[in-house]
Length: 251
Image 1 (spheres, rainbow, N blue to C red):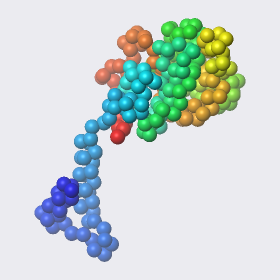
Image 2: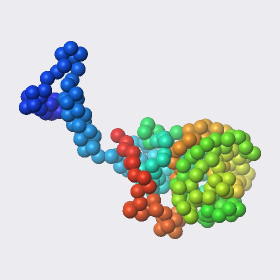
Image 3: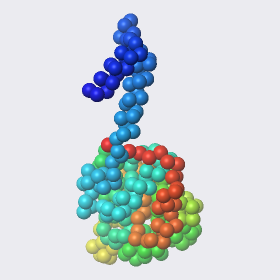
Image 4: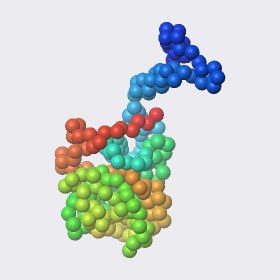
């Protein structure tokens, strides 16, 4: 109502009239209206990670610290192409479901499943990370998904690391999402844990395709671990770094 009153006042002051022949607003009136709409949108506060966490119903499902850090990084990444965020929580053991695919726009948890870590990152827990070729370790931090392909392990998804010196060699290392029999939860009953990979976030055979289809082509992946050394080195935790800026707001 206030917008309409402001519009009528402006019309009176400036003598703006409607174009009767086409029953449309004068272009100047349209411009004023659009400016008011833009101001109103700018005044709306973006939703917080805490509110998103509550709205999606992630309490007791996803580690809040991992989610908060993931959302903060997501907002800084310019080249993302979709509002889907994947979190891999390596503070959890491999016998627990620790990969989460979240649609931030629709506020929905799409998938929750198991995921492997690199064999030299640890046994049941991933505690050591690397960016080096042939390290056979997982890499921590932020990634963008890229193209899919069919390879040795079937339908697979390439990713690109976004942090120089931390994970930017994952493509060179052939670290990809793919299916693995060693990620089958049935192994937990006999071994007490899942198998391990050569550094890839390998997925259970029955979950690999739906997860890859959901996150392919430009979504953000955050690999979380209780590793303060990473946070000290990562630009994503330096407030002076914007990573291209264009923040996404969720209403």
